[in-house]
Image (cartoon, rainbow, N blue to C red; front, side, top):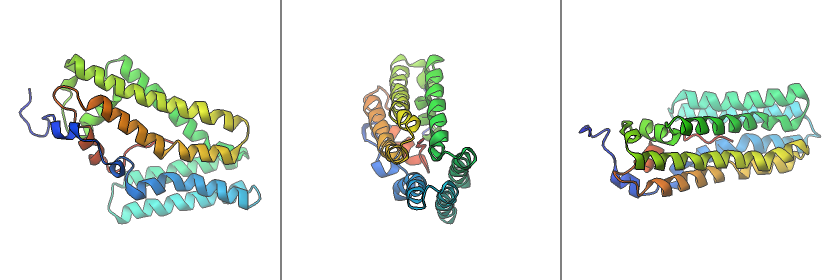
Length: 228
């Protein structure tokens, strides 16, 4: 077993749940996640179904939050990825002339995330374990421990279920052209469902032998991934 403190399991971190605000990236993370979609739907409705104006406003909001991250001296790639994601969504909606396509990228991401987690579980490299090890600067010796491997696999399965649940609820709204309901579902199943995923992951990992630094890993993430 490694004697390097950076790679030692943190039993205290495993026993304590990650602070909710850390899990969602703080108030800025919540606003950054929710605002673009909310602004798009509100402006689209108020501006007489003007997709172009709605998209510009959504991108402008994302840009403001991106600049806020730069001012706070946070990792630039997070700020850039947020702006690019919203810009692509706005472009797709504008190009296709269908406002609901603003959420199309989110569907594709959820499909991709669910697939990636499933594959990682199949090859015995569950992504939750990989992410926790990377963020907490721990090693990957847990792969040789059947109990830890099983715990990480179960935690990864939680996220597969959450990603698929978003698709099950939101895709019918998309095909029904129910933009307002789709926007509400997108927001309601964004940050809240992410928190549920973090909480259930912690419940599955907290009592694993050797301790799993889940809370420490969440806190170390400057902007925890919160796929829409």
